[in-house]
Length: 522
Image (cartoon, rainbow, N blue to C red; front, side, top):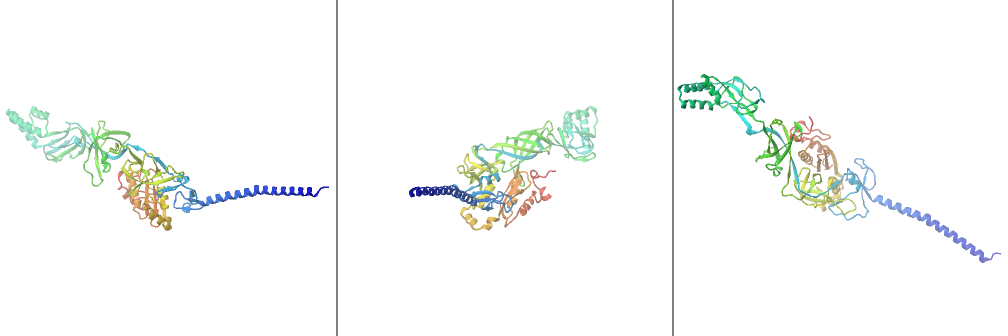
């Protein structure tokens, strides 16, 4: 028979076992539940703390993922409001990797170089002015016959050009024969000299003396070899002494004459080597040296003529052929200067700005930097001050970064007053939402087109910034939608002669553009 002590001990062990099982089960199930609940809570908090924006419309800022209310594109994460980011200065802007990829932000590391400027010039082939000669009549009379009947005909020196009937010349020949018959050397020499002054040749005079007969007609001989540029007389015309019969040019040497803008003249010097091509002879490159720079600027075109002398014995180069030249010259006094791509510079007319990537930040951070520009090198600029060798500069997408800075109320291309603009952006949400970004196609060819297109856009009230990409033919705009719209901007550009996606420029305006700017293919 069990004792009361044994029964009590057995019950105690059973109770302890049950309590231990309950405790283990609570630890396993309730602990995991608590952990799961904490994790979900953290994830929810992180999701709620993230800011979402549109890559095409950076003014859109939403707390939840979704689609852009303007273009219906998927929103991308901008940055977390509760993340422990590094301290960002007033002149710095942070962007997520996704935003950078979608905005196609690219950077380039700058270095010191010996800047070389390539100048493109446009011109044409003209005759060498020193070879131009006018075939004039040395004595009056009537044209009996012409040996040259059309412009462009080739003549040789001494060739007969025309036959002239001249009573004065007939009288002079009779005086020659009379002096010869009198055997008076002084009179004979005087008569010969008179005929020589009237452009008769020694052979013609000897023929008159030999035949003993005076002729009322005389042949007019060419003074030079070349091409007849102008024919001024016809058979039967009466002419006076000194009248011009033909204009003749020797085209064995010609000039290539180019027009250089006044801003490029400081980089051009006599004897600089020039390479040029002709649209009539594609694939062939001609070269020469600058022989003359016109000291006078054309008041209308703001250009000066640059002359290059070219040998043309093969007669390949014909007057009025269009030519395009390139001159590469090293900029003296600017050796060892930093250069940046033209696309990296945001220019407001007063300030030149670039965005420099911060190297020591874990999240992509870009700093606004004001620089001083030197000469333009075509596709790049010389930087006189503001950058150091090795710094990483945004070469593509700077406008997107600048737009983000504007929307956050930070200093930007158009906003240089940090405190006033921060106050404005934090209290004027209507103005904040009215800033729009747009881009559309605009036709054009060169840097002259770029300046004309951007200026036309900026003339519209409400346009904040305008940048036309010459390669892509796309204009990027920032404008206040409360003051203007894309249609008005497009109309302003078309009024300057450039077709846009929606408006075609008037033909009369288009044909007034310089030849290099005319983009419509015939």
